Length: 78
Image 1 (spheres, rainbow, N blue to C red):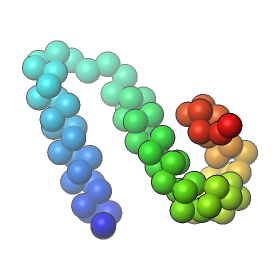
Image 2 (cartoon, rainbow, N blue to C red; image 1 turned 120 degrees about the vertical axis):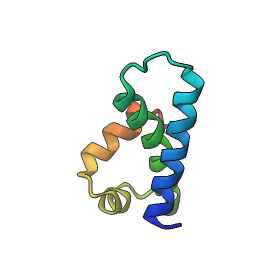
Image 3 (cartoon, rainbow, N blue to C red; image 1 turned 180 degrees about the horizontal axis):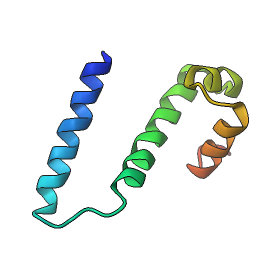
């Protein structure tokens, strides 16, 4: 899946979201998008990194402590 394909999936999802609002204005859209996209991103990357936080942090371009905080925020750590 290419970057362009992922962008198109996001674009299509956003258009559907706005259609579902039926004219109601969205609130905190950026925060909502970051939250709904970040959790599955972290889940998939952690799976492929075999739950190695250092490797996952490197792949994501994050500091390991930042990754750990995000994992805790999304309740992805036991």
